[in-house]
Image (cartoon, rainbow, N blue to C red):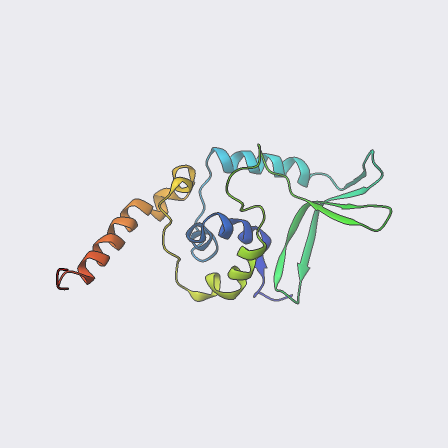
Length: 164
């Protein structure tokens, strides 16, 4: 394996917020908050286990390292269930109910990630929306400030245009 692999957790981060993903994976920034602490506690619980046979008969492998040389992804599955009929079923643990942000379904976001974001060297713009309120990187990202700067740039570009 080489260093050009994208971490599977980056897919989730990118789908939630491209700038958050850039801050974590390009600039090495991370901060815990209530949500990340809950997630870490959940992962600590499942990462300690090796494997079990479920009541339904599947072999469940916990914290299973996975990678794909072909698409350049690497990471660790929370759980992979291996069923007697040959079916393989990955399971991702998340704390709480499914949220409105679909960052746990990162197929399209993963494609975008592999094509441009981390290797571009340029952070994506701040979203400055409801996701930012509870983001642990909000103080580093400063979405309100960056939104104001972007607005000023937009106004400056039109400053000398003729009025309609």
